Length: 609
Image (cartoon, rainbow, N blue to C red):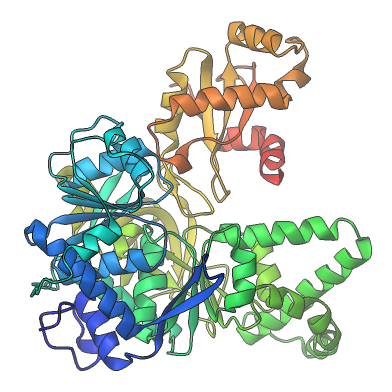
């Protein structure tokens, strides 16, 4: 019997119930088709792997897991960058009936240690032994952890903690190559992943997603996007994010499409040109970066800027007409068609070529895409469709389709998913994709549901079947990379240090978290003098040296937060926020909207840099 699955291969996608069955079904359908592509640094070229070749590698991972004799449902922690090793580890975990615990490769060691402890992970695979050393140094007891495997060993054995055996992946795989195993696969109601999300508290919460949750979402997205075997996905969002796991990893398996793993975000522009993807799964931050580069280039030429803006305006009207959002302007439509004959090759085609030239769907999720960027890319022919979801919904709730796209909304609910508006305009969700609950947190789980509906914490309206997100019920920051941060926890951590009298964290729909802080005057006098600045000059508060010193201090105070929650920039002030200046309430709570307006120009300067 094959080591990749114990049960018979399902006859078609509609009958697939688990992710283990999904992979086995795909291998049986198109064994020789290209499944994955990644860049080999040693060879200096992209290397392709078929579904059959991938399955053979997965079989090796299954064998290597067997000597541990883990119980069904044991947690397997995966701390790897996107690539074939991450895929094989995940697939082997699923085939054995274990539960993957995907973790962000760039997260800080303390956060990773907490997840390993909370999930009772029995096994960890990481990129390097240095990572494991730093995780162990966090000091948390990990009694369930029995084995650590790394892709790269750089340290002497004596430098590693003796609490858990560490093996190189080649040694781990070769040691079990001779074994014959018969894995017991998962059932539909078993956990398919334990995905940790920061949610509304300082400590990450483990979201329990079953195979039914994920498979129902995969099938729903397939019907909306209709990917095919000739499609090529470019994967660069971390596989620790449910958005990438479902839409950028499991969806291509269902479609039989190829996934190419980007070398890095820094090399993404080059990878887009070389891979030429047809489907791109992204967060707004990627489009923001491209848009920022364009704006910088245009600032050097008023004529080019004028031409570019004309192309956007013309293209946006054409897009709006194609979606039925703009009607009754026949003469303008005719003139636009003439203008487009000139503007398309001059402007639009050049932008499309930056994305490889053959994109047919570009999915943007995780956070809202600004109107300016949305109009720019859609107007110039980049087929962006926005959606809405959360880790707790596996994750897709609603999204637009290429031929039914209103970018002012997040589209229509996918098949099988119900949405409604509850108290305080809160969007609530019900469907087979909704999580079982939070790991070891019954009270949090209970609070998250009302009458069987999941409370999203987002305010919305539903008009003509389309969901429009209006704001947030609770004070949660969602960055443009889709990370969620509870600002109150962050602010409390900062103000625990007496040199910071008040703190306000921000970063909604922005690429990173920053904060404004009221400094104690004593601290400011000492800091300014140590840097050779005039403490009485307000301009000194904007000195790069002063800001850098304060940000460094804040990093020390927030070191236990996930890396994406730690402020990377700061606004310094000596003026306290009071009831009189309308920046706090009588109960001393921050008036966030007022602070947002008060620091608007400073914020623009931070994110412009």
